[in-house]
Image (cartoon, rainbow, N blue to C red; front, side):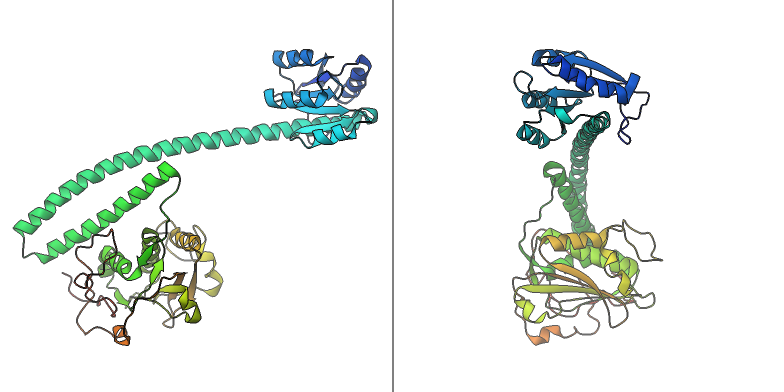
Length: 437
């Protein structure tokens, strides 16, 4: 549509041509509308006239019209013609010219989006110019909005196709990797039966590869349905913590991190994969930003929530680093937010993802200060009851027994086999300086 009218100042003339269609059965009424238009817009207005509905539609089909002034008494009804123009010619603004004795008709037109109204007996040049400018502005805004929505839909369709294609290719590569890795595991089992270190390393790679496949499945679900699996279930936090620590063992050992897991850990009503995302992000956050350089320590436990314990349970993950200033304890959950002086490692989305997931299940997450000076993150989620355990389960395990996470976790279902989790419910730790297997 030509830039026919300056919508910021009614009556201002610019280089565009305003194409106006005046529809009224009486010539004298058409002239009463045309004269003020010429007064305000001068040479920048081009006027077309129509006495009946069919003639008006013919003009609209023949050339672009910026604005149509439609008399209320045109054959078939002015409001009906206004609706036809709005539906068939969305680039054309419409103004209903109602009679002074037809206020209900004017009110009905005013309720239609993008339609202006004027009363025939109260027309003056300036008010008509303002009405024309307003109608044209509304149509332009509406067309811009529709164009933006269309571009967004096209972009979404392209992104959806890209995600599906990428997911397909990645899934094919994972199938090849899993086949080759299975062969490698069989070879290690048959040719290196005494090499427990190699077998443990292979199990660790298998666990990390399985978790990466889960991320791929989430990506596939996102591309197919626009969402990921969020259905809550009974999630055993203890087994999830074991899995996460096992997968992060390379970083834990590289940085000589002492890990203390104080049981029992609760069973929560949350999707297991999403709960694992929560634990993984909080552990990684501590490893990246929250550990003392001389004696790094990570503590995981479940604090007592008192009376709320009947319906809610908490998971607490703390470190012994520099801590989080009180003014930043709410901000750090914002996407991309980092504490001043924090290395730009990662995407800055880890804590924001934690907050989003926790909020989905009606829980909450907060940052606190640790008695040791570090930071503590407390996640509260609906509980399905703590596992029964005796007070002795909270004692420390014997000296020298380091944390030995399961070597062959299936990572698909919670594990309760005591052979797989021999230290469940005790303090489990990776001791600094301990020789690595």
